[in-house]
Length: 237
Ligand SMILES: O=C(O)c1cc(=O)[nH]c(=O)n1[C@@H]1O[C@H](COP(=O)(O)O)[C@@H](O)[C@H]1O
Image (cartoon, rainbow, N blue to C red; front, side):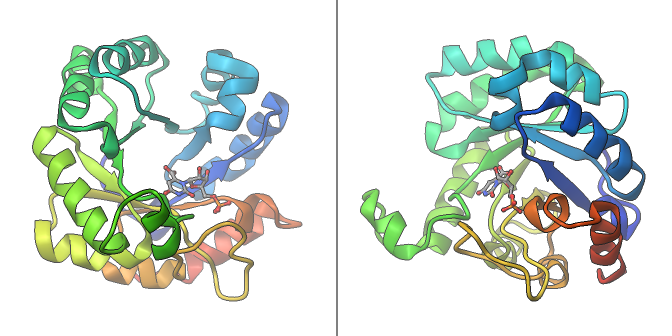
């Protein structure tokens, strides 16, 4: 499994959100030396499929973010289908329930020591308390993140995806063991866009994040390599 980051730059995972495999390759090629992994997600996978992942994989460890969410049998089958791509990390929605997370973990075990880190997405960082309550969840994001974190970790997830604002409460409740991957990260002065629960890179790391997922502030910059290096330079330790 991908080890916890050793240098500040390894904490950063640029989100390569594009439908164009050539652009994904170009970004991965230029960003790989300055980061710990690259994230490929639904936009690329639905446009260009597994072949795009195969092309990027030799350049950097791949966080394959497909946010699986279905019945346990279907999710287990999807995990088995993804293992030949050798992703370093895979996501699934904790809201799919304990049996679904457990089925994913069992399927992933087939890869042995090379199995991907299984990350359970808690509450999407685009949801504020009002948007979350519209889905029928009362009590606010922190409470729901902690509830889903407990469920997912007990069912076999290696780590969690949460916003920077829940990192401290998760560390208080579950200690250092869970791997915490944190999107919703915005360098001071950059646009939040559709992200609702945000903090700066330094704040997220100080709270206890292991990896930071950062997309548009890097890929939308005039010079993505310089943007990545600037963020890494501002991280503690
Ligand atoms: O699983 C994720 O990576 C994820 C979970 C979440 O709650 N929020 C979230 O933004 N993400 C992903 O993180 C990336 C954030 O991108 P930017 O908002 O451009 O920095 C996107 O690729 C999202 O798909």
